[in-house]
Amino acid sequence: MKLVTYNTQYGVGRDGKFDLERIAKEVEGADMITLQEVTRNFARNGGVDMVEGLAALLPGYFHVFGAAMDLDFGAIDGEGRPLNRRFQFGNMVLSRWPVVASRNLLLPRTLRTSRGNLQRSALEALVIAPSGPLRVYSVHLDHVSVTERTLQIHDLKQRAFAYVGEGGAISGSAEYGFPEPPRPQGFVLMGDFNMDRFSPEYALMVGERDEASPETDPVDVYSLGSGLPEGTVSWVDDAKPEDNRLIDFAFVEASLAGRVGKVWIDRDAKGSDHLPVWFELA
Image 1: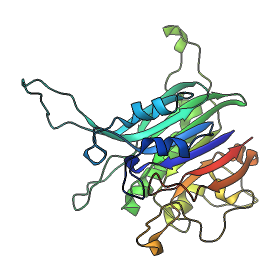
Image 2 (image 1 turned 45 degrees about the vertical axis):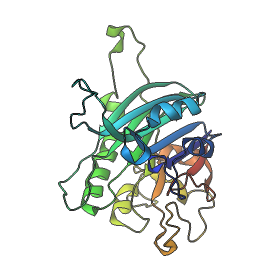
Image 3 (image 1 turned 90 degrees about the vertical axis):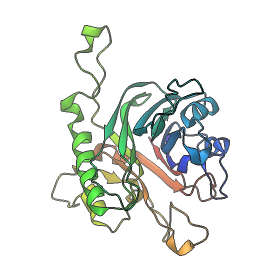
Image 4 (image 1 turned 180 degrees about the horizontal axis):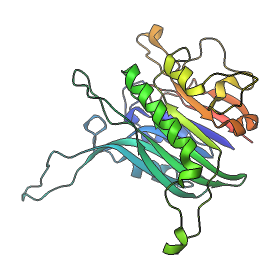
């Protein structure tokens, strides 16, 4: 199967134009897709409902959306009635196979007023793939604070590894007339981590690798197979190419590492200031 993660920058590309069709075409062919910076009623893209739009453009997928941030300052219509026009900002997962359960995991945050600080989250999707059940997380971490990212990674790892014992979105579901969902050990964490591979946050994510110790931390897919060429980036500033960085990642639970095949970044994508990160999982 092919998986891809893409921070959509609310649909606005490197040319400054909003184009959802371009975003959809750039993830075509994937079996599972995780997206970040998906919005509803955001002024910067004309208030488009990106969830509805992407679902229509990608009709062959099951999809879930989790709003990390949700605001409404009281918009009313001409007759004084609430419009319920909520500005939502969050993550999305699309899958060719059923997403039988999902949870929106809100990640720790700290107060910051000098710059924007939106609530961040990881959207968890339990997918029944042909090779077996799999947990896929669409992740978006803070872009400014190392302290905040560190707290978020601690929490994200704890929640991912607690899943089997915790039970996910539901357990004992026979009481409600549903089959009991599986609780797979294997998971994939994909998205915009806003860190580089030499940062303390990255070291916290992957832990210490030692042949004498069990591999209990997530494995960076970039470290598997042939790896990535020197200078590979996933975030692009065409006006200041010296600022380009590799900040989008995919990590797999250690039991899945041997199933990871080709890993690549679509350097030709123009639909966002980020580039789609792809990998294959047998």
